[in-house]
Image 1 (cartoon, rainbow over the protein chains, first blue to last red):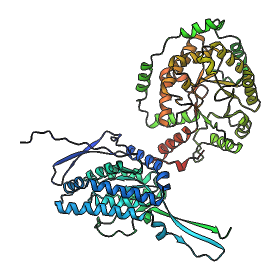
Image 2: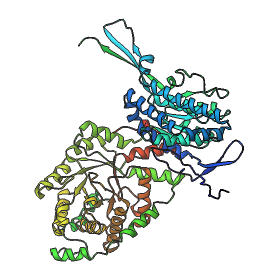
Image 3: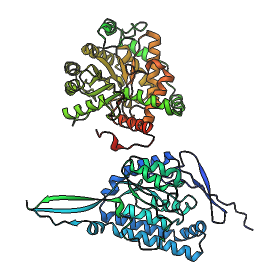
Length: 288
Length: 331
């Protein structure tokens, strides 16, 4: 008989490189698919979202100003640390998604590979999306992609790790900073990812992870005047249109949610990076 | 309540130039008498002061009370720029912001004053016109105060001649810390005289005074010498306006009015950057000295970045969603 007391965990948020409790003091129980208790998670409030946006705005200059090569190195380092937590991720994904051990392992492998794939894109975006433009005059003219700014990400509700990585990594690769609202029912792998980010080289504030309800936080993030873009992938089905309308008030870039959650193992292409990149075109006199 | 800038108020102030108000008119008769008086002031319980402000800081100010607090705080801001790189253009743009802090909302009140170096007071005066916003100038070899008295007096006269109607002077901390309290006193008296009709704010630079007991003594020196306001800091030294320091200075102001009948204003400056800090100060005022001081004539915030945060919070209350730094000016 094992008479050791269980260590019941109460996870916290990840904001500005620290792990604060929710300002509201709220937590909620997270269970596995069969309804067994897994852990308590912080239930983020609108003020946590506000603080997260301030943190993301503060981190933007440094992250977007880093060289693309350096950003790639930092993101690759995240994948390394994820690899070190492979067993933990597998157990958590299996528990929250109800997958078999082999399917959970496949999902975690795919998530880490996806992160590496996006890490490789940082210094190739400019070559693929930008370039020299032909102009009819004695000028040199070129276009370069630049990050949009602070992006709010409502992470997928079903795919707790692969889906999360698939929406977060492309935002970061372009040089944006992110405020992520995790899956409400399945937040545990996201919390572990936050611990990975905190112990890798990603500067504090570049990623802020809020566990809680996308329905509650979505409207505050969509209306927030200091958020430049919002990915509505994890928005509740009935609310996405409303969030999009609210986002229009401050002319945010919006990624609409698909009708049903997509197969995250499919090759994403550039479709998740380009929505949060602006193209800057510069005219430059030739000679001199 | 006579405004100090009112010419009719001058005879009262003129009396204050000569000797402290009764019952303290003899405490400055000699160096040792003054030291005995200042060291006889009740000691400050630092732990108690910190506990008191921590408790007051937990007050929750919401909805209509918050809206009132934000508007009141905006009307109390001394919008400040004190950089070596200040230009007439920057002062003019600051003056425009002082008149209409939120151009998108005509209901937003204007600030109390613009605070600049003395040589730019004329630019500020011209830009502010008849808006009712005061021009405050720092003088007396701000921020260190390390100059001879003649230079300090000339600095003050120059600022007043340029159009400043409020002078922010620094005390001689070197003299204070070496125990020459009467020198500090006499210098403030001399500066007050040089101010003429201008309002005098006395900066204690509490970050350099080390203890709260010293803060209380310096506050009394400034009030006895005829200062119209006592001000915490220059903003160039950290720590600046902490809440325990503000509490001690407010208690000094309260005790001084109780003893002499003369009301002195208070201005915390430096380190107040958020609406929350400002509201905590308003609570502290109300609970320590009372609502008589909740008026731009008696209470000011010396700040530059605070105004933007107040405006963001104001916009949040008005629109119902969070605003961002793109919606206020970059100063």
